[in-house]
Length: 503
Image (tube, rainbow, N blue to C red; front, top):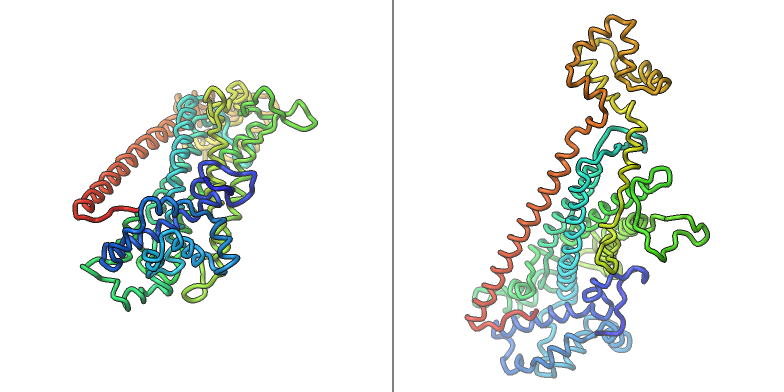
């Protein structure tokens, strides 16, 4: 374990899951993997002599794995004034002069940097995905438990139509599922490059390294790292694959923020339909001891705001001057913050108490409060079905206007259901009596029972549970097949006498 393991971004937000990849002194581990994969391919192609390759023994490999970013920084500052040449010098010192002369042949800096970066983000995704799935599965439990529990729907901050609590949870979980699907797709599309200083394979072609024994040097190097090559590149990879992956990551952050925003508003004193768990020694305010602030829900939304602004750096790095410039180099060092923020959000939801219960599972839904707010507006919630039923029953006037400007004032004044208000005025209007008789009896019962006007809320909630279960099961099958294919290829290479992966 190296000394400085701080993650990019604010030191307050340091999810430990990301330290092995983005902890500062661990950053060059994947760079070394790229260099070793290139050496192994040079040896397999018969370019690097066996006696030189054999100098890189297990002890050397372990030492290379321990090269820290701080060590590279020191050589860069005091000697090379170039980070990758500093790394090359350190590797050469470890492996000795015979093997050392082959280090970084025929690579350019960004063959290493961009390929290593893709490796880092693939591995970071593999850390994120289990946490995302756990959040989805725990939300599925919430959906199931509250699938038919009534809640007033809200639009523009106002009471709208009836839904269920499970339906609300399901709208969040579907967004998480969609964005995880996109993250998986774009993580699988992250690519590498071993194409040289301008992307045209100049050294490989000029030194007869591109096609030997009908193999492609770039493909063979990247195969050892589990990456596909970019179709074409300059000195740097085309920015789109990583940008789309980071965008999907940011979008997932937004879906978690939506949950945070909904919850913190439902936790308002005058609403109280949702409550954060509050531990025995927790403090809600530095001075107002009665308060129970929604700090976790607010953090979910705040982390999204940080991520949104971090993604602007990705957009700023979409263009480069000709085949490459250094403008985007320092900016790209901040890209991991997007995944770090996302992991921080997930950790907020999945933080467990001493009994193993996560914050997410302990979020309390106050059904009494949900019912109170629903029945607070029950007399008026049938405005939509009432005006539609009137029109369908033959009312030729403006049914919406009738409900809005005639029936609503009566219902509010007398504290009665809108349909009852309609029946009341119909006693003196024969035409309205005929319209009411044209409304089917079962529809009339619905108009008198707003709690039944939840549409397909319960069914859609349960549908999302099934969708998530089926989708994740399919992913597991796909991942298992990929693993089997990768293992088969590895064993095949061993039988053919290849040395195998450097991973």
